[in-house]
Image (cartoon, rainbow, N blue to C red; front, side):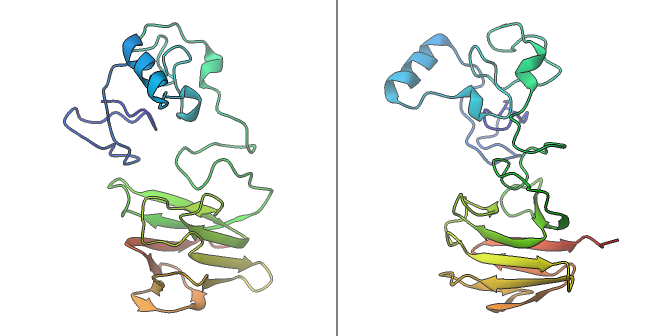
Length: 206
């Protein structure tokens, strides 16, 4: 069953997407379904999917010449992602609606807590906020034990150090399983906030 949210092909027996953990509903969308969604106010918006058929909203791939659901012919422009920043767009990484603003990539956070296949988030120079709030640089909305703005990681090129600080969160920040409010992150340190465990990976600067 193809996920409406990210386009991932899942085994038919799955109830949640293996890639993004979204709830899987029906694999085929028909006109009656779309009408009932409009009436209930929960109409599926194809513009909010990774790539959706402009006719029916069914998730499509670059290799599809026609929509697998409604057989609508697909033009190449259907596959162009929104332009928020120049360069390569990697789906499911960080918050794609926030421009990078020329900041240098200095590290990553990797987690297998939210999806079995894993998620990774870029860490840039300057201050990176982590939390459930959509305004944070690294948003983890699925974990209800994480505060809106839970933790920050600061990297300054002048000293090449990663400094973390708990932003007065409700459940605290654990680094290498020790409850601590602030300090310095080292390569391959583990961070636990709420029920989410993250591995910190530093990119050597050259």
